[in-house]
Length: 156
Length: 245
Image 1: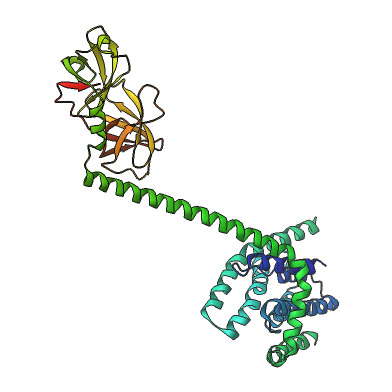
Image 2: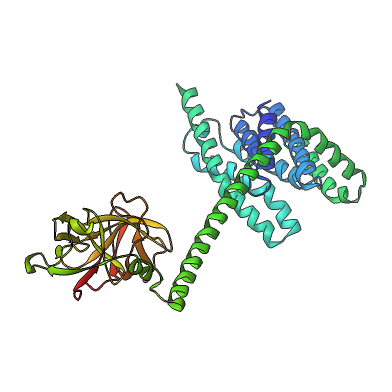
Protein backbone atom coordinates (compact mmCIF):
# COMPACT_ATOMS: atom_id res chain seq x y z
CA UNK A 1 0.00 0.00 0.00
CA UNK A 2 2.80 2.36 0.93
CA UNK A 3 4.38 1.74 -2.48
CA UNK A 4 1.12 2.64 -4.22
CA UNK A 5 1.05 5.88 -2.26
CA UNK A 6 4.70 6.57 -3.10
CA UNK A 7 4.04 5.90 -6.78
CA UNK A 8 1.10 8.29 -6.69
CA UNK A 9 3.06 10.97 -4.84
CA UNK A 10 5.82 10.68 -7.42
CA UNK A 11 3.23 10.97 -10.16
CA UNK A 12 1.44 13.92 -8.57
CA UNK A 13 4.69 15.79 -7.99
CA UNK A 14 5.67 15.22 -11.61
CA UNK A 15 2.28 16.57 -12.69
CA UNK A 16 2.65 19.56 -10.39
CA UNK A 17 6.10 20.48 -11.65
CA UNK A 18 5.01 19.88 -15.22
CA UNK A 19 8.35 18.34 -16.13
CA UNK A 20 10.19 21.51 -15.13
CA UNK A 21 11.81 19.71 -12.23
CA UNK A 22 12.85 16.10 -12.06
CA UNK A 23 11.21 14.31 -9.19
CA UNK A 24 13.17 11.65 -7.26
CA UNK A 25 12.04 8.07 -7.81
CA UNK A 26 10.14 7.74 -4.55
CA UNK A 27 8.55 4.46 -5.59
CA UNK A 28 11.91 2.79 -6.13
CA UNK A 29 13.36 4.29 -2.96
CA UNK A 30 10.47 2.72 -1.04
CA UNK A 31 10.95 -0.60 -2.76
CA UNK A 32 14.71 -0.71 -2.17
CA UNK A 33 14.19 0.44 1.42
CA UNK A 34 11.92 -2.56 1.96
CA UNK A 35 14.48 -4.89 0.39
CA UNK A 36 17.12 -3.69 2.84
CA UNK A 37 15.17 -5.53 5.53
CA UNK A 38 15.03 -8.67 3.44
CA UNK A 39 15.71 -11.73 5.56
CA UNK A 40 16.20 -14.11 2.66
CA UNK A 41 12.51 -14.71 2.16
CA UNK A 42 11.94 -15.71 -1.48
CA UNK A 43 8.31 -14.62 -1.45
CA UNK A 44 9.33 -11.11 -0.59
CA UNK A 45 11.90 -11.08 -3.41
CA UNK A 46 9.36 -12.29 -5.93
CA UNK A 47 6.86 -9.78 -4.73
CA UNK A 48 9.46 -7.02 -5.08
CA UNK A 49 10.41 -8.06 -8.61
CA UNK A 50 6.84 -8.06 -9.87
CA UNK A 51 5.96 -4.91 -7.96
CA UNK A 52 8.90 -3.19 -9.65
CA UNK A 53 7.72 -4.56 -12.98
CA UNK A 54 4.17 -3.29 -12.43
CA UNK A 55 5.33 0.08 -11.10
CA UNK A 56 7.69 0.48 -14.05
CA UNK A 57 5.14 -0.43 -16.66
CA UNK A 58 2.58 1.96 -15.17
CA UNK A 59 5.18 4.72 -15.09
CA UNK A 60 6.09 4.07 -18.69
CA UNK A 61 2.46 4.13 -19.72
CA UNK A 62 1.92 7.41 -17.92
CA UNK A 63 5.07 9.34 -18.74
CA UNK A 64 7.04 7.64 -21.52
CA UNK A 65 4.34 6.22 -23.73
CA UNK A 66 6.47 3.20 -24.57
CA UNK A 67 6.36 0.40 -21.97
CA UNK A 68 9.70 -1.12 -21.15
CA UNK A 69 12.09 1.70 -20.35
CA UNK A 70 11.43 2.16 -16.66
CA UNK A 71 10.07 -1.37 -16.34
CA UNK A 72 13.47 -2.73 -17.32
CA UNK A 73 15.29 -0.26 -15.10
CA UNK A 74 13.17 -1.01 -12.06
CA UNK A 75 13.53 -4.77 -12.47
CA UNK A 76 17.30 -4.48 -12.94
CA UNK A 77 17.62 -2.40 -9.79
CA UNK A 78 15.57 -4.84 -7.72
CA UNK A 79 17.66 -7.77 -8.97
CA UNK A 80 20.91 -5.96 -8.18
CA UNK A 81 19.73 -5.05 -4.68
CA UNK A 82 18.54 -8.59 -3.95
CA UNK A 83 21.78 -10.14 -5.14
CA UNK A 84 24.13 -7.67 -3.45
CA UNK A 85 22.21 -7.63 -0.20
CA UNK A 86 22.16 -11.39 0.01
CA UNK A 87 25.92 -11.62 -0.36
CA UNK A 88 26.30 -9.79 2.95
CA UNK A 89 25.52 -11.93 5.98
CA UNK A 90 22.61 -10.65 8.10
CA UNK A 91 24.95 -9.94 11.03
CA UNK A 92 27.12 -7.71 8.87
CA UNK A 93 24.25 -5.66 7.49
CA UNK A 94 23.70 -3.82 10.71
CA UNK A 95 27.06 -2.10 10.87
CA UNK A 96 29.49 -0.61 8.45
CA UNK A 97 27.20 -0.80 5.45
CA UNK A 98 26.35 2.88 5.20
CA UNK A 99 28.21 3.31 1.94
CA UNK A 100 26.70 0.16 0.47
CA UNK A 101 23.19 1.26 1.41
CA UNK A 102 23.88 4.59 -0.24
CA UNK A 103 25.13 2.87 -3.39
CA UNK A 104 22.08 0.62 -3.57
CA UNK A 105 19.70 3.52 -3.06
CA UNK A 106 21.64 5.55 -5.60
CA UNK A 107 21.27 2.64 -8.06
CA UNK A 108 17.52 2.98 -7.77
CA UNK A 109 17.80 6.61 -8.85
CA UNK A 110 20.57 6.16 -11.38
CA UNK A 111 19.65 3.16 -13.50
CA UNK A 112 15.93 3.65 -14.35
CA UNK A 113 16.18 7.18 -15.77
CA UNK A 114 19.50 6.39 -17.42
CA UNK A 115 18.09 3.72 -19.70
CA UNK A 116 15.79 6.01 -21.71
CA UNK A 117 18.62 8.53 -22.04
CA UNK A 118 21.07 5.85 -23.19
CA UNK A 119 18.61 4.42 -25.67
CA UNK A 120 17.05 7.62 -26.97
CA UNK A 121 20.10 9.88 -26.47
CA UNK A 122 19.98 13.65 -26.81
CA UNK A 123 21.59 16.43 -24.83
CA UNK A 124 18.32 17.51 -23.21
CA UNK A 125 17.82 13.99 -21.93
CA UNK A 126 21.20 14.06 -20.26
CA UNK A 127 20.48 17.44 -18.71
CA UNK A 128 17.25 16.15 -17.23
CA UNK A 129 19.03 13.04 -16.03
CA UNK A 130 21.71 15.08 -14.24
CA UNK A 131 19.07 17.33 -12.72
CA UNK A 132 17.21 14.34 -11.41
CA UNK A 133 20.35 12.99 -9.82
CA UNK A 134 20.83 16.28 -7.99
CA UNK A 135 17.23 16.35 -6.79
CA UNK A 136 17.40 12.69 -5.74
CA UNK A 137 20.29 13.15 -3.36
CA UNK A 138 18.26 14.61 -0.46
CA UNK A 139 15.68 11.83 -0.85
CA UNK A 140 18.43 9.19 -0.78
CA UNK A 141 19.98 10.71 2.34
CA UNK A 142 16.57 10.84 4.01
CA UNK A 143 15.96 7.19 3.20
CA UNK A 144 19.39 6.31 4.58
CA UNK A 145 18.56 8.17 7.76
CA UNK A 146 15.26 6.30 8.10
CA UNK A 147 17.03 3.01 7.52
CA UNK A 148 19.71 3.72 10.14
CA UNK A 149 17.10 4.83 12.62
CA UNK A 150 15.02 1.72 12.14
CA UNK A 151 18.08 -0.53 12.47
CA UNK A 152 19.12 1.30 15.64
CA UNK A 153 15.62 1.03 17.14
CA UNK A 154 15.39 -2.67 16.32
CA UNK A 155 18.67 -3.25 18.22
CA UNK A 156 17.19 -1.64 21.30
CA UNK B 1 13.75 -17.43 -12.46
CA UNK B 2 11.15 -14.78 -11.82
CA UNK B 3 13.79 -12.12 -12.12
CA UNK B 4 14.84 -13.44 -15.49
CA UNK B 5 11.23 -13.64 -16.66
CA UNK B 6 10.61 -10.06 -15.61
CA UNK B 7 13.77 -8.95 -17.41
CA UNK B 8 12.85 -10.77 -20.61
CA UNK B 9 9.32 -9.40 -20.46
CA UNK B 10 10.65 -5.88 -20.00
CA UNK B 11 12.99 -6.23 -22.96
CA UNK B 12 10.22 -7.77 -25.01
CA UNK B 13 7.91 -4.89 -24.19
CA UNK B 14 10.64 -2.42 -25.04
CA UNK B 15 11.29 -4.13 -28.33
CA UNK B 16 7.80 -4.67 -29.62
CA UNK B 17 5.54 -2.16 -27.92
CA UNK B 18 6.28 0.62 -30.41
CA UNK B 19 4.87 -1.57 -33.15
CA UNK B 20 1.57 -2.15 -31.37
CA UNK B 21 -1.15 0.31 -32.21
CA UNK B 22 -3.08 -0.82 -29.18
CA UNK B 23 -0.37 0.59 -26.90
CA UNK B 24 -1.61 4.11 -27.63
CA UNK B 25 -5.07 3.14 -26.45
CA UNK B 26 -3.62 1.59 -23.29
CA UNK B 27 -1.65 4.77 -22.60
CA UNK B 28 -4.81 6.84 -23.12
CA UNK B 29 -6.87 4.64 -20.83
CA UNK B 30 -4.24 4.76 -18.09
CA UNK B 31 -4.02 8.53 -18.48
CA UNK B 32 -7.81 8.77 -18.17
CA UNK B 33 -7.77 6.65 -14.99
CA UNK B 34 -5.06 8.81 -13.47
CA UNK B 35 -6.93 11.97 -14.38
CA UNK B 36 -8.99 11.75 -11.17
CA UNK B 37 -6.17 11.37 -8.62
CA UNK B 38 -4.03 13.83 -10.57
CA UNK B 39 -6.75 16.46 -10.68
CA UNK B 40 -5.65 18.31 -7.47
CA UNK B 41 -2.06 18.46 -8.71
CA UNK B 42 -3.22 19.82 -12.08
CA UNK B 43 -5.33 22.47 -10.35
CA UNK B 44 -2.52 23.40 -7.97
CA UNK B 45 -0.17 23.77 -10.89
CA UNK B 46 -2.65 26.05 -12.65
CA UNK B 47 -2.95 28.24 -9.57
CA UNK B 48 0.82 28.32 -9.15
CA UNK B 49 1.36 29.27 -12.80
CA UNK B 50 -1.30 31.97 -12.57
CA UNK B 51 0.30 33.48 -9.47
CA UNK B 52 3.75 33.35 -11.00
CA UNK B 53 2.53 34.95 -14.17
CA UNK B 54 0.80 37.72 -12.19
CA UNK B 55 3.93 38.37 -10.17
CA UNK B 56 6.06 38.49 -13.33
CA UNK B 57 3.61 40.90 -14.99
CA UNK B 58 3.79 43.17 -11.97
CA UNK B 59 7.59 43.13 -11.89
CA UNK B 60 7.70 43.84 -15.60
CA UNK B 61 5.28 46.74 -15.18
CA UNK B 62 7.35 48.22 -12.35
CA UNK B 63 10.48 47.95 -14.50
CA UNK B 64 8.68 49.61 -17.37
CA UNK B 65 7.43 52.44 -15.15
CA UNK B 66 10.97 52.98 -13.83
CA UNK B 67 12.30 53.06 -17.36
CA UNK B 68 9.62 55.53 -18.44
CA UNK B 69 10.31 57.73 -15.42
CA UNK B 70 13.98 57.86 -16.29
CA UNK B 71 13.15 58.59 -19.90
CA UNK B 72 10.71 61.27 -18.86
CA UNK B 73 13.29 62.87 -16.59
CA UNK B 74 15.87 62.86 -19.38
CA UNK B 75 13.37 64.42 -21.78
CA UNK B 76 12.45 67.08 -19.25
CA UNK B 77 16.09 67.98 -18.90
CA UNK B 78 16.42 68.22 -22.65
CA UNK B 79 13.32 70.40 -22.76
CA UNK B 80 14.67 72.73 -20.14
CA UNK B 81 17.94 73.01 -22.04
CA UNK B 82 16.09 73.71 -25.27
CA UNK B 83 13.48 76.17 -23.99
CA UNK B 84 15.50 77.87 -21.32
CA UNK B 85 15.92 77.41 -17.64
CA UNK B 86 14.16 80.51 -16.53
CA UNK B 87 10.60 79.47 -17.24
CA UNK B 88 9.82 79.19 -13.58
CA UNK B 89 12.04 81.86 -12.18
CA UNK B 90 10.59 84.41 -14.62
CA UNK B 91 7.12 83.67 -13.25
CA UNK B 92 8.35 84.36 -9.75
CA UNK B 93 10.08 87.56 -10.79
CA UNK B 94 6.99 88.97 -12.41
CA UNK B 95 4.82 88.50 -9.31
CA UNK B 96 7.11 90.00 -6.69
CA UNK B 97 8.31 93.32 -5.38
CA UNK B 98 11.87 94.37 -4.76
CA UNK B 99 13.67 95.13 -1.51
CA UNK B 100 17.23 96.23 -0.92
CA UNK B 101 19.65 94.32 1.25
CA UNK B 102 20.73 96.71 3.98
CA UNK B 103 22.83 94.46 6.15
CA UNK B 104 24.68 91.18 5.79
CA UNK B 105 26.87 90.69 8.80
CA UNK B 106 30.13 88.79 8.28
CA UNK B 107 29.44 86.77 11.44
CA UNK B 108 26.22 85.43 9.98
CA UNK B 109 27.12 85.70 6.32
CA UNK B 110 25.35 82.50 5.29
CA UNK B 111 22.56 82.76 7.85
CA UNK B 112 20.62 86.00 7.53
CA UNK B 113 20.22 89.36 5.83
CA UNK B 114 18.33 92.52 6.61
CA UNK B 115 16.11 94.13 3.99
CA UNK B 116 14.62 97.61 3.85
CA UNK B 117 11.00 96.55 3.84
CA UNK B 118 8.88 95.91 6.92
CA UNK B 119 5.33 95.50 8.05
CA UNK B 120 4.51 98.83 6.41
CA UNK B 121 5.15 97.14 3.08
CA UNK B 122 2.95 94.17 3.96
CA UNK B 123 5.85 91.94 4.80
CA UNK B 124 4.91 89.14 7.16
CA UNK B 125 6.90 86.50 8.95
CA UNK B 126 7.57 83.41 6.82
CA UNK B 127 7.27 85.24 3.51
CA UNK B 128 9.60 83.72 0.90
CA UNK B 129 12.47 85.83 -0.35
CA UNK B 130 13.87 85.47 -3.85
CA UNK B 131 16.90 86.52 -5.80
CA UNK B 132 17.09 86.20 -9.53
CA UNK B 133 13.74 84.38 -9.39
CA UNK B 134 14.97 81.63 -7.02
CA UNK B 135 14.19 81.13 -3.39
CA UNK B 136 17.00 82.28 -1.14
CA UNK B 137 15.27 82.35 2.24
CA UNK B 138 12.27 83.49 4.21
CA UNK B 139 11.40 86.39 6.45
CA UNK B 140 12.17 85.56 10.05
CA UNK B 141 11.64 88.86 11.92
CA UNK B 142 9.54 91.82 10.85
CA UNK B 143 9.89 95.40 12.02
CA UNK B 144 8.00 98.45 10.91
CA UNK B 145 10.53 99.60 8.33
CA UNK B 146 12.83 96.59 7.92
CA UNK B 147 12.88 92.83 8.20
CA UNK B 148 15.35 89.98 8.69
CA UNK B 149 15.36 87.07 6.36
CA UNK B 150 16.91 83.72 7.16
CA UNK B 151 18.96 82.51 4.22
CA UNK B 152 18.55 79.08 2.66
CA UNK B 153 22.20 78.36 3.51
CA UNK B 154 21.55 78.78 7.23
CA UNK B 155 22.06 75.62 9.25
CA UNK B 156 18.65 76.08 10.86
CA UNK B 157 16.87 76.43 7.53
CA UNK B 158 14.99 73.27 6.55
CA UNK B 159 12.12 73.04 4.12
CA UNK B 160 10.44 70.16 2.29
CA UNK B 161 11.37 70.11 -1.37
CA UNK B 162 10.78 67.98 -4.39
CA UNK B 163 12.83 67.05 -7.43
CA UNK B 164 10.52 68.16 -10.14
CA UNK B 165 11.44 65.56 -12.75
CA UNK B 166 11.18 62.50 -10.52
CA UNK B 167 8.81 63.82 -7.81
CA UNK B 168 11.15 62.51 -5.13
CA UNK B 169 10.52 64.28 -1.84
CA UNK B 170 13.28 65.40 0.47
CA UNK B 171 14.33 68.17 2.78
CA UNK B 172 16.44 71.11 1.69
CA UNK B 173 18.80 72.11 4.48
CA UNK B 174 21.66 74.57 4.67
CA UNK B 175 24.95 73.80 6.35
CA UNK B 176 25.81 77.31 7.53
CA UNK B 177 28.81 77.43 5.20
CA UNK B 178 27.25 78.34 1.91
CA UNK B 179 26.12 74.90 0.81
CA UNK B 180 22.64 73.47 0.58
CA UNK B 181 21.82 69.78 0.57
CA UNK B 182 18.71 67.93 -0.45
CA UNK B 183 18.48 65.17 2.14
CA UNK B 184 16.48 61.96 2.66
CA UNK B 185 16.26 60.89 -0.97
CA UNK B 186 16.22 57.08 -1.08
CA UNK B 187 19.59 55.87 -2.38
CA UNK B 188 19.70 54.36 -5.83
CA UNK B 189 16.93 56.49 -7.33
CA UNK B 190 17.37 57.87 -10.81
CA UNK B 191 18.37 61.33 -9.64
CA UNK B 192 20.60 63.12 -12.11
CA UNK B 193 22.65 66.22 -12.11
CA UNK B 194 20.68 69.16 -13.47
CA UNK B 195 17.25 68.11 -12.20
CA UNK B 196 15.26 70.99 -10.73
CA UNK B 197 14.53 71.33 -7.04
CA UNK B 198 11.40 73.23 -6.00
CA UNK B 199 9.48 73.65 -2.77
CA UNK B 200 7.09 70.81 -2.01
CA UNK B 201 3.38 70.93 -1.56
CA UNK B 202 3.65 69.38 1.87
CA UNK B 203 5.47 72.43 3.25
CA UNK B 204 3.34 74.46 5.64
CA UNK B 205 5.29 77.68 5.59
CA UNK B 206 6.13 78.11 1.93
CA UNK B 207 3.89 77.67 -1.08
CA UNK B 208 4.72 74.75 -3.38
CA UNK B 209 6.54 75.08 -6.65
CA UNK B 210 8.99 77.85 -5.72
CA UNK B 211 12.25 77.25 -7.61
CA UNK B 212 15.30 76.64 -5.45
CA UNK B 213 17.99 75.39 -7.79
CA UNK B 214 19.13 72.20 -9.36
CA UNK B 215 20.86 69.00 -8.35
CA UNK B 216 24.60 69.14 -8.71
CA UNK B 217 26.67 66.04 -9.29
CA UNK B 218 27.84 65.68 -5.70
CA UNK B 219 26.03 63.42 -3.33
CA UNK B 220 26.68 61.32 -0.28
CA UNK B 221 25.09 57.98 0.53
CA UNK B 222 24.14 57.58 4.16
CA UNK B 223 24.20 54.27 6.00
CA UNK B 224 20.45 54.55 6.53
CA UNK B 225 19.69 53.97 2.85
CA UNK B 226 19.17 57.63 2.02
CA UNK B 227 21.31 59.93 -0.06
CA UNK B 228 21.97 63.65 0.28
CA UNK B 229 22.44 65.62 -2.93
CA UNK B 230 24.16 68.96 -3.09
CA UNK B 231 21.86 71.62 -4.50
CA UNK B 232 23.27 74.18 -6.85
CA UNK B 233 21.24 77.26 -5.94
CA UNK B 234 19.60 79.19 -8.72
CA UNK B 235 20.47 82.47 -7.04
CA UNK B 236 24.00 83.66 -6.54
CA UNK B 237 24.28 84.21 -2.80
CA UNK B 238 27.69 85.77 -3.12
CA UNK B 239 26.46 88.59 -5.26
CA UNK B 240 23.06 90.02 -4.54
CA UNK B 241 22.12 93.50 -3.46
CA UNK B 242 18.39 93.34 -3.87
CA UNK B 243 15.83 90.64 -3.20
CA UNK B 244 12.27 89.99 -4.25
CA UNK B 245 9.47 89.06 -1.94
